[in-house]
Image (cartoon, rainbow, N blue to C red; front, side, top):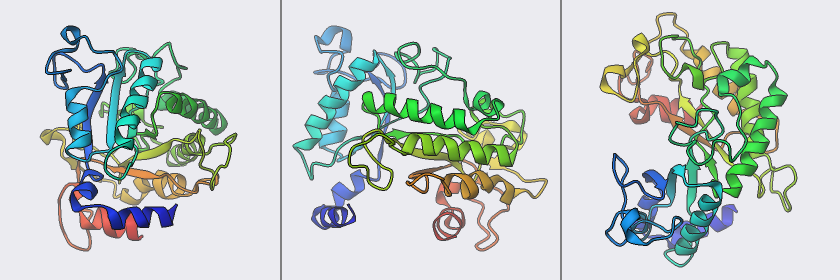
Length: 312
């Protein structure tokens, strides 16, 4: 695999490499006709286009062929069957262009009981439904969480999803934060154990043929989030917005918030060894850069991303 990747990299243009660094905006299947994430088919809205539900939109074809983008964020789907057909269509397209690099379709959690959530539409009731992460933590049983991961991973792969934008492993130390329910709670040890089980469940392909170091045809990449933690939100404000841009540590517990990552996601029991991807949070970890003294967004921080995450 490493040899193949190195060979591909030598053949790629700068534009093709840049495309692999990009992510699509939210993609509904079929594309929405109104709202933030609209799309067209032959320059017409879906209802007037005569297109099949699983057809690629004009915008999807454009970012795949012109922008060399391969990381696609799926949201609502008409049904799991339609999602699988759409995945077949997108993979058939990219097989014949560029280096033949497949699309890496990803999704936020799809197995929750909240059918109104954008990523559960078309999935709730049609795939297995489970408690949110806080509910899984309430079982105090990591084996149940691992079982969930194994089942959900098989469902994701059947729908053409290769990367889970989960688990959310922030320590929920700020009860006013509106994403509290998506975490494993505030206890570092419990969150660490649940993180390890969740990621092992998603990534380890137990029954796969020709599995490689735990990876196989039932494996799904787990993108743990949010480094170095979204839990210590100032006033509980949402980090997606400017008014919630700061993470604060009045108890000087920065290192504690890292434990679900360093002791859980990066030290798995399974053969895949560690989570395959990490999503930084959108906040400024205020006053935590002791080396360069910068107060910048985590994703732009050399200390947070390079020194702490990659090197240490």
